Length: 361
Image 1 (cartoon, rainbow, N blue to C red):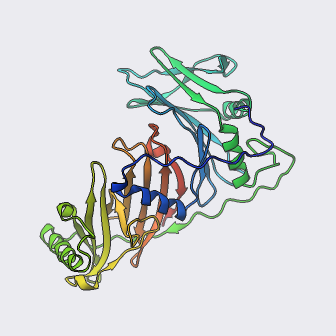
Image 2 (cartoon, rainbow, N blue to C red; image 1 turned 90 degrees about the vertical axis):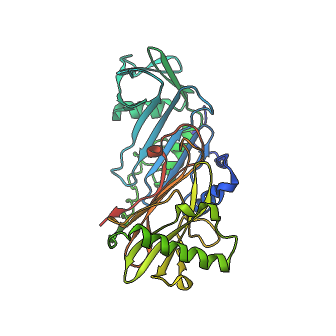
């Protein structure tokens, strides 16, 4: 990396996921990026911040890497926000390792040379670095180029190219430059802006589910109505994915499956007075796509909680794309969360960069 921490180099424009345009995901990504701060790419790292300025930086594994390994640094905003650094390694093993040996450019890390214990969950092992080791690694990243983890029969390496620039950018977003809490450009300053308040969203459960026959009838009526207005708005061969739910006050939430791909199903959402498809109103989601912004990909609605989630995959294994959710508050659907990963590199969805978060009331 060998990049001066004195000046943040202009970030590279994020590489868009190589996806099929027919799936509608390119528009999903562009819309979501407009609605929230788009993650930035700094050589082999990506960074982004959410609506309360909690920021995340992730190392990007090489494309088609045999062993997927990456670092994820997350830091809340505010004077007390402490960085948390974790390491993940995915391997094809019968018995995952209990410890990993780390090296920085060939030198033992930590300096003691002791293997560090990891926890296993399926084919992934995870290490959360101590505060001391985190600080040491951040400082070492100014000159080091590669972190390597090894165990019997497995090895993974992480490029540190761009990590300093990513951390410097995070310091800028959180107002830490020149303060003692900065990750990179430390100084004598003591004033760090407080984190914004976390939005509180009150979700409203909806009435009991419509029975299957009633739900099908509501969706069929709306599909027939739209067919008269816009014959090409929804593909007929996707209609088996249509769904409907009661919202109360004689209103119905209808999802018409409009486009089906290998691993993505795009649905258009409407609120409709019962049995009155001509009066149906398309919803407009903050991160929706389609002409009306009322389309979500791989969406699922839980009437018990009033929560509507979506997960637009960039490819079949689901290691890139956009995920998010909304809560029904009795009047409209309000955004509750949004996360994005614009590179298909084997990074698990739970580690994607969060762009929006809220607290349920």
